[in-house]
Image (cartoon, rainbow, N blue to C red; front, top):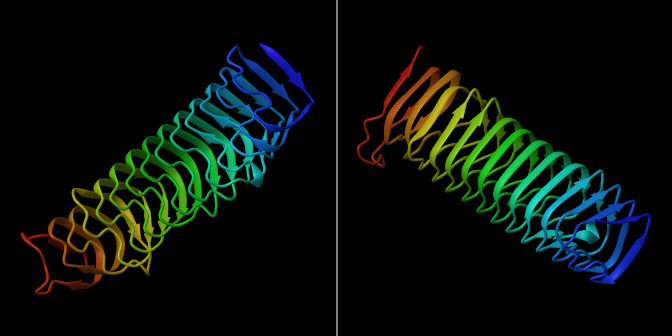
Length: 282
């Protein structure tokens, strides 16, 4: 393995196609493109990336205690086997068409359009802000300890498990499939529309018109915020809600049980079979 310490590189492909392993320590990648493209077995620690597209078409690489500046946008595309620890990612549009990626203690303060068309994603203690359209069309996702600020998250995502998350995100999980959330808070209007097999366990839900047009929706021991009104329209649902729901509108089928419900709206627009059982203690 080649070892490079405290060096500066810029321009086009300065470390291109290093396939026999490369260890970078304290290296700065300046303006330019594709500095490490087509590499394999790369280890980078204490490095700073300022140029575009450094890790494209790479295999088996580890990044520790590094910084990706905004100029290092779109840094990790078409890669396989990425491990990232204790790293600050200031650049948007990261992680596209990448498989087998693990992030731990990573901050993404400008996570616009990140994690598109990816598979095999594991996140531990990750924060993402300005994260509109994060996880679009991605699958096989395992997350624990996650803070998210950004809209349209997890749209069309499949096979997702999330634990201990705090998410401020509207239009989340649209047309998603096989998603389970545990012990999480999700705030933002139009949650989970058109989702299939969405399950929420011990979760807090906020925002108007949540969980509409869902198929096989399950809620276990969840709580609704005061602004979560007009819930479950045209959904097939099995729900146990602790406390109060402001309003429920035209659920299609299933059972909804809550401590109390402010308003139940069943009108001429309800869809067949229109036989949902709605129960409240008050």
